[in-house]
Length: 321
Image (cartoon, rainbow, N blue to C red; front, side, top):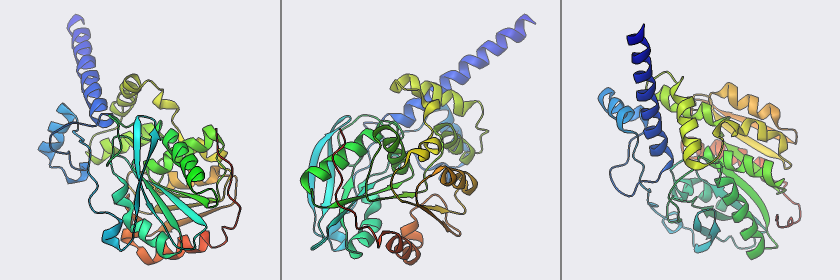
């Protein structure tokens, strides 16, 4: 019996050490080293090494810019939650609308260039934002959307100050969508319209999905990782639930989701949609996973977005304190 208790204690310590290392890798922006590939692209041996050592996620530089897509742009800088944020502003002549684009986890604004190009062709100016620690923005860590919600607010207020006559539309992919949802909860955001693409429902579930992608049962590692990540970042990750924040949205919402999304199952995306209490539209993208839907199905994405935004005719709204 004594040996059994000792073995359990040793196992408990080992599991928590692994969770601590994993949490550090998932939230800290590494200063050097090779970037860990997506779980789906790892061999069994590579997955084993990642489980032991944790992921390595150095800042991913922006590859390409709006000029490569035929769009003139300006660089803008303003204060964010961890220092200076960089964004690209793509003006559209005669446009009275600006779309703010927020990228996914450990991505950057350049990964949304296809979306920006379509928005621009539809007649919208764009403000493409790098979250802290991503692309060309300052920062040492990611909170997977929790504190990034403050950067959504900072970007929105900046747009209202610099282009006061333009109406604002928010677009977010995955973590970017989750950050928009939390900002809506905290700051009662009132904008023209909101587009959510592949938002995750809870932090525990999105962490668990990464373990599933590695062929590892999510319990208890996902819960331990969220616990230790919360310790590192100073917030309770178990309360980070975008599915609940959806109830606080105040602007019309378009939600798009792939039917084969393994990170956020379609059924959970629909449950989030059910919580939205304002005018809403849900569009499924058949055969698409947790990926850029504009890249996979550009014509359907363009038509869906155009139909949703075509009646966005409200006046600019006030700055949120």
